[in-house]
Image (cartoon, rainbow over all chains, first blue to last red; front, top):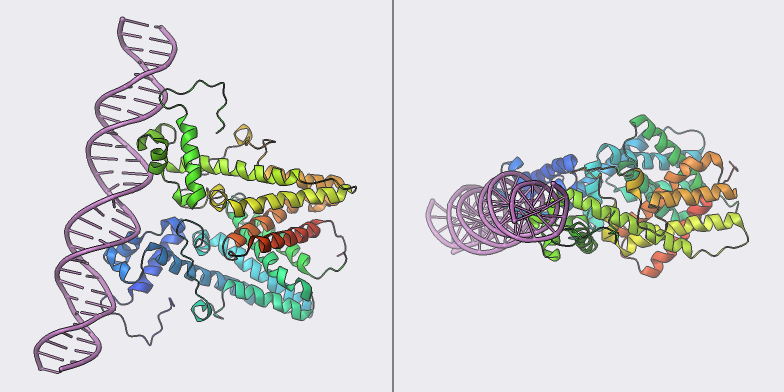
Length: 223
Length: 223
DNA sequence: CAAACCATGTTGACAGCGTGAACTTCGTGT
DNA sequence: ACACGAAGTTCACGCTGTCAACATGGTTTG
């Protein structure tokens, strides 16, 4: 939706203001998070009158949500990039688990390297505005290499573990929430209350954490 | 710090503006999260000129942080309340694990019942302002029944598990991050991307999740 | 080919926000 | 009794989001 497909003839005056504004908004978000997305400043950077934005967004929250959507796509891309690094071992179960860890690593890495975008990605539906425009189905196509969104990548990785026999079918449903919560929580904690670690220490923490989560998810009917 | 001890003679004109402003700010935060806490409105509700606030806070972020501190205290109180419900079984290990789950349940329950306050509690250090005034040591005393903050309650619960022998010493350090991340992530997910469940379904989800985390943390040297 | 059309962008205006500077009020210590 | 200084007020400024009215210029149509 943000990706301007070459088929579309350029809009009348500017070129593609919608896209340009989202891009400017993204830049602002990178620098200062959701609250730094300022309509007038975005318009200024694009070189256009403030009110021109209202031809493309009903109000500021809609711009923010467009930026959030792009941020989610970027997050997905980070996850895919990390997954692409996985080298197959002989063991299918281990490979599936590795891919899950990679998904998680891509998630946390993105949160730490682009905290502003990460914050904006999950800012809609956070009270005080509550736009919550559910783009379901076709609207959801991201711009990642596979066109999948973060949650879809997670489900895919978990399905892989299920197929490889390292995740029990009975645990499959709760596994989504479990894995997502762990990784999301780790991101927020590393960004907020536990910020200030050296990158090296962070990486070690992340790896240890992901390893623990991965092993924790693996079917253990030992109870 | 927010609690006005009765010994202190009341300030000159208003009575205790500092406290009153924090209270008004808290009310605003409850209704609309961090961005809803607006200096002029808080002053209006207290019945005072906007600039009067500047005698007690250097700027808006400082007010927000005071509200955040109170919100953390409220979170701690919720965790303590849930812990107080724990009835001892015979098993010390089980009791310790129960108390950890109670801590988590109190955390998530507070997040869901007071989303605005929960959001504001973790909003400092979130880019774009970045006050990050570290109140260490004595400043940290909350107003909970035990005067402990959320992270201290967690550590305490984990220490209990360690003492009861259900948590291995080698896992003790990572356990903090692990448990906190899981519970915090669950809260955020239930509040954002996975919002809209019925309270009953939420409770079931929470219980299942906490049970899983609890079991996951318990020493399993089966690898 | 010209004229009407409508999407796009501009100008002007308004209320509300955070914040600074100067001024007023009033309890308190000398 | 009086001056001092903390607490609160008033006025002012620049910034924001948003509305209403207007200008512009491809596109479409008679």
